[in-house]
Length: 230
Length: 385
Image 1 (cartoon, chains in turn blue, yellow):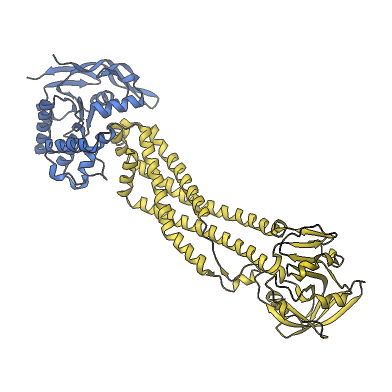
Image 2 (cartoon, chains in turn red, yellow; image 1 turned 45 degrees about the vertical axis):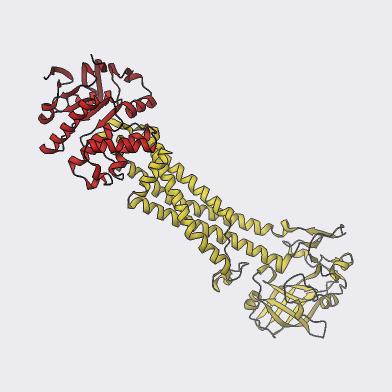
């Protein structure tokens, strides 16, 4: 049986809105196991991205407990949170978030530099990642020279290069056409199978939903449905 | 090390604004170097001129002599027998002071008559043109006095003064030389004559009011007080302090403007690159590390400016240090103790100090601008808010 990587119990997240508070998440319980290819689905404002941010240690819960790889997110210091993100979590964003002044190779290299891997090891891992996303020939290009699909593939390579246990993908296909969405999702599915990486999506894109093996539907900050798809 | 690598990479690929910042700071750096070089060169030149033409290694003043009290002049004199050996060895130059008046075709003007040993070689002044008493007194004046009194070489003037007993005396004087020395303290309102002739006319044989010496004599001499270089340069030092205050204020304004530009650019850069900041945090950097990265980028701007400024400014300053800068005749009208060619000074000490100051200020300004990254909400900036 696969081990539990993400364990969420009674998660509440409130944001200040003027003089009042807005409750984005209202008592969410969720458990994600190793190797899952699951997604948080629901309309805008349902709390998908908020869960991803908390799991990614970019934010903290207002109430409840969120454990990621045994780390209680609420008690992490900035240093340990950064270490968790750096070593164990990969992020894929809707807008790719590539650093414009770096080449494709350098963008993918960034997490490895932070991990202080030596040059030879970095090069091997980057070339592997470039092969996964089929962008070896674009290694010296800059983000401005890439198409949307290519940019998102670089973002996937950057998230995957350090072989993290968890990849958090926030609307990864929102800016892509059908063909590129298909390519990206197939690629992520393959990596999930090959490397046993756990993928957690936040999406309301039907194309993504077709690939998910677990679909957690959120409505108004609560889990409305949690279904596993065979 | 990683932060440094990233900062260098970011700087090399940064946009026009950063290069504009570097250019502005480079210009400021060069301006500061030149301003410091000008002041340093100017004061050194004045000091050098004073030593060469006026003070040598110090002066002995008669104990009653006070240069700031004109009434003390006529009564401040004494025998100079104790200096005879030094005078003979050309190590001391006696000067007798008498206040008086000079009558020219343009009228009368108050003047300080200075009798100086015509055989002296300690000071670089034209005493060799003075000759012994031949009935007409030989004299030289400075170019400022000549201009003010409209006198030329060969002109005859009448000078009046009081002798030892307070009796008025007058004598015709021939202007045998116009001294072109950039030092108003031996020029304005003064006429230089042969010491022996003046002593004779004043019945003050073997007496003088002051002596210029090449250094402190071994024994103390009664009625005479040694004035060392600190006293000689006291006015200059006070002037220098006053000028430097103004100069530092100007430097402060230059630097302030440059720093404002840097602060502004840093803030804009943080605003423009907020998604990048969010990404760096998402891949595992701490916000504090991102603050350091942006601060380092600012510091690199400072270092680049110092390098560029040094590459351009130092050779230029060295060139002018060697060849001088022609200030034109207008500088003479200012009655400053400098020649119309100024030799700025390129001092490594100044370069180092200016570099450190620029670097420190840039680092502080960059940090102040960048520290707001630490307060940013990463979730919000990843959303582009």
